[in-house]
Length: 301
Length: 301
Image (tube, rainbow over all chains, first blue to last red):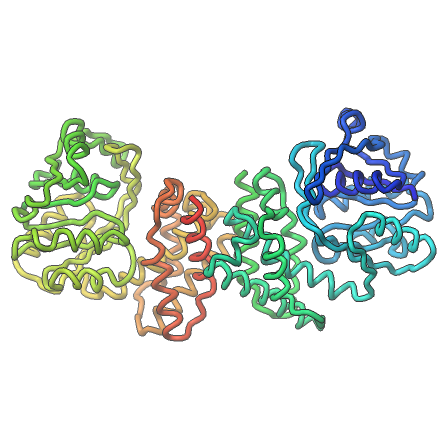
């Protein structure tokens, strides 16, 4: 399968390296030619489960080549997705599918403004990756990839197989809303709190004061989802603690962003929860406090 | 009047310099002899309202000399007050009064474990001071000193006059609870929020997201006080915004403490509000979140 990965961040490099290693035909699309050339020359240094490999990947900065690909993976942050889709939509071949791997709520809705929704696949990633330098990436935890599609045809089955070749656990899901909310609730507690106290995920539940607040945030977010009619097969509050425990030594993506002085994805996580909370009359004050503090930190860097 | 000031921090140096300048007989008690000697030799460099003076002060590290003083001012943080009172209580002369200038609630109650309450005076300071180096202090804003005494005798009148010689506006108060709560509510919003976003006080009310949260915190704290039966002659929430506006360029004492890797006074501010909130059944989740984050920051430095 010909797969185009757009963006050379932690997630883009991870997929490019893993898929190249498992013999998929990968092209990594970079922002500019000098970065594309450098990455092609030096390769990607991928560390995963204590094993480090240098993997040579095919790169380009020319979006004309997108039309040759069956699967497009915009590996960019949620807040950059819209501008990327706007830039690429006229360069895709008519059949190509676009996989949306961004964190947060309403990613499919946002993307369907640019790409027909039958061609969109939603992926929820439950692993972390950390970019050590421009070509050096560490995959921080084992994890699952959950896939949702509105159009289950033979191309989607090929895409499913391509994902299975990554060695991640791959699960096709029918209940997108539940799982998107589930992940977003977990993120709504872990990401901003870890970014504010500037500590690893595990610290949030080892420290008894923070743990109480952590639970209260996840609970507040869950109340919004439940009032929206979403039912959960697993308690999101327990799941949030479970994720914090399993990723105890990881630094969340939001903390990484704050440390780098970058914008965070909080608009698509706590920001969306606050929007819904206001609409349906659920108190979201704790989410609001986290949101206001993270926005202040973004602004102050 | 013979006044002993204990502690050479921002507030201790400010009082020592101002009172020495206005011809009170001041002794500044330092933690050790080398600091006492250095301060005696170099003097205090005090900046107040765009005027800088070098003021020579009398210093010592020997608490035996405390017995010669009529007024004792432990110029230490709330969390150090107890150990200081324990150390000095047997060195005071029988008539001496002790002025408590610490931030927070229940300072008088704490001090009365060591000193008979008829000898205690409670002072509420509404000015800020910033220690630039060991002997260099800036008074950041004009402000008031509010004084409360259970025993209004001629010695108290002398003490009142000594305070009046500082050029601060001095006001004697009878309603201690209202004013202690009033100041604590203001601090419960300004101090932790400014310390968390690491910005000057004014930023908290210029930024519309933070302003909403700032108001919610002050409001939550006010609800606790009101449920305890405290009535306010002025709305504490408006007052908090007013203080943030008037001290827009100041860095709060809590932010200064966090930056220096020091312990903060949060136990006596938001910590006390949380205690009362739990006792009387008022939701204090926002105070809890601020408390948990500040405690995590103290721990991580």
